[in-house]
Image (cartoon, rainbow, N blue to C red):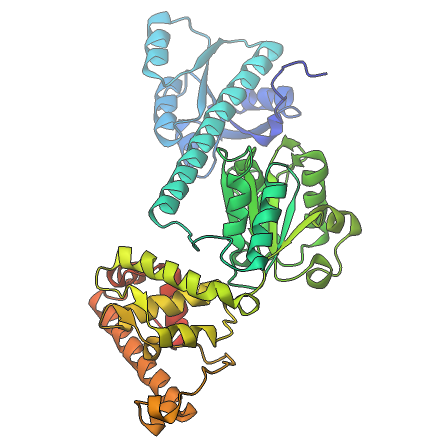
Length: 486
């Protein structure tokens, strides 16, 4: 049964700096408190200030009477370097006006008369550490809120939008039905889909259709984190857990508390990470790296994999595979639902017409035929890129088949050949060689436009993307595809 008390802190996880000009006084402090606190020592105020350049002390304890720099002066300067540090002054002189002035100035948080009592000073040090920890926790929460607010603002400006999720195909109608069935629960969801499908759209639909709608939706692009980096990102860490961990940090499980955590295409997790996942799912507990303190978390987990768990993660422990695979949703690739291609393409056209007044707004019948004849190995993401490019290249309001440039890796089911009396082009244009030549010319045109934009923006990719009216990720994709090293 809960008592309502705040959890006890690990006092040794916080640094305490003791400053005195007499070695005997430092030894007395060491003898009394070394088992309870993590202590650091400095002979005099000057040495103490030097220590604070590298030491993030929670508490600084200073003697008042020291040659060259008094304890009050030292604590004033210490506050300038470490504003969160709690300053405690040890004094044998009851000079109340000076002490009151020092406390009012904020340099001194507490003062203790000498000779000090070890039990009393232990309580004072614990109170000071708790005060420091509260300040840091509040700052961390404000930073998390600001980060999430910025994330929401970006999403509002540039929403991920693949049109009507259901589309026209029976397969996507089934996906919509599955979303409705699971959204109101807290069950983990496995999305099985090839790269470039509408994984995040489905994950967001689950989140929006659930009671968690007003809590955070947190997406993690797992390809950006390798090995232990993913474990740290998901579960956070404790200060000092590894080199570079200068402060405590909450993991994505904590940030997504009461909301939804979407993991996009994670690699096979290491055994330690599997154990953390299992505890988070079974016990709603997250432990930060380097800590054994349990942190309650109620994050609904949605995982996207390119195939089933058995096929993608064959070595996963059975308990975790069972938990993650309770409710799978398969998104079929575009080649299995060609009736959705034109609907999505027209949606992307409307999307880019809102961004670029000069972009084309409709598809010709030949363009629709060409789209339906392509397999789209990159699925909806590739379709969006193809339409965005065509909308830029088209000089009129209508996209023609020649404006559509597909990637070199496809195997296209070519549109039916026209009858001789319907043909208006040359034999070269109708041949595969002519189509390849056209693709090459379009690539050259786009390459030149990108190079000019890079030169105009002095290589600033964010500025290039804004000037062209495209997303930065789309720009990176195109630079890579066209072999532009910038």
